[in-house]
Amino acid sequence: MAGITASGRGKRVLVLDHARKAGEKIRISGGGRCNFTNLDASAKNYISNNPRFCISALKAYTPKDFVKLIDQHAIAWHEKAAGQLFCDESAKDVVAMLLDELEAAGGRLLLGTEIKVVEQRDGLFHVATSRGSEQARALVVATGGKSIPKMGATGLGYDIAKQFGLDVLPTRAALVPLTFSDSQKTFAAGLAGLSVDAEVRFGKVRFREGLLFTHRGLSGPSILQISAYWQEGRPVTIDLAPDGNCLETLIAARKSNPKQDIATSLSTLLPKRLAKAIAEREGIKGHIAEQGDKMLRKLDEVVHRWQVVPVGTEGYRTAEVTLGGVDTKGLSSKTMQANAMPGLYFIGEVVDVTGQLGGYNFQWAWASGVAAGRAL
Figure 1 (tube, rainbow, N blue to C red):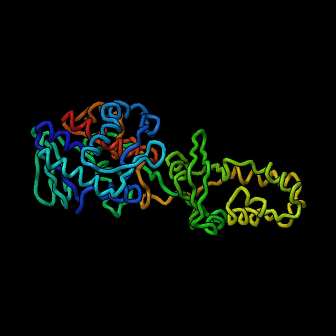
Figure 2 (cartoon, rainbow, N blue to C red):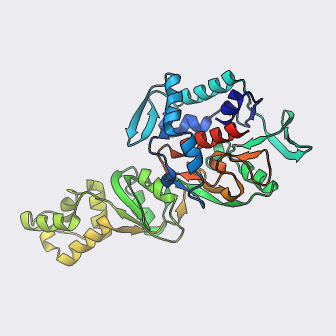
Figure 3 (cartoon, rainbow, N blue to C red):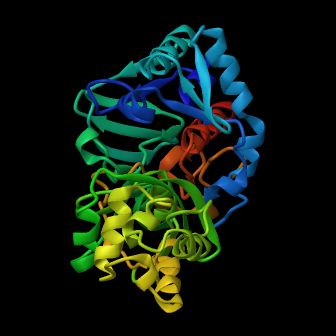
């Protein structure tokens, strides 16, 4: 987007990429259909040490602006959930669109080009690559974070930032499954593959979306969302039946069907596998008529306020994004240029701006890219 925008302004642009194919993270996103933006994108959907940093770029290039580009290329799309836009066919359509736009604007792309050394002297940036050396008055770093290293992700952008005196805030994997140990891991593994609608909370942050049990812990949209806020050593609280009232349901079942098995009573709120697993874990057997109010309240607590303390995450291997990155204090929010180094720009995920799940990170990529492209 930076290259397309700058080329469209008559600038000579060369995009260097060490990958063999362009836009591979775009290609695999959204289950192969690319959740390319979110109509509701605003500062509230982003995590940063400076929550206001993203406002200028997001206002200058909006989700509707990107949809207009998508429509110009006749790419069919649909709204899957509130504000989340996906391609009808394939994420490859978005990659092709961006490549076509760059070529039409006169920009060049060199794939399979490893970055060796970056220097600044005589008013120019010198980039030594596996294909030789390139020089330019401006250098835009759009290298992303460390997420999904098998697709080529590295910490190169952070290294360049440090080299030129910019601060880099600590990074960690985000939008990533959470992992358990001991009994909680055994419980989750026994339910691997089962998904439920759940509300997941950490502190004041909460998300109501799908939750998936895995062999190592928990995943699914609600868990990926909360992983960006979760802090090590602290519990996550989960409501496994956010539309129900477990205590009222069990008390009513005790009156209307006293000989009903406790797991069967729970299964009116939860999938049968989960209901049975909870009853077994809590050591509750027999008819519901045999359960006192104390036991029913315990089950209510387990269903609506299940507290788990993850031991960690699946890490960068499966993380969709990287939290932290180039400190926004060193950048202009309007142009993405480094305050102390004219001509040096940082855009996208390499910057300390991380979107929630749902197309927000793509919108930040487009918007920050356009901001730099207009300023170059």
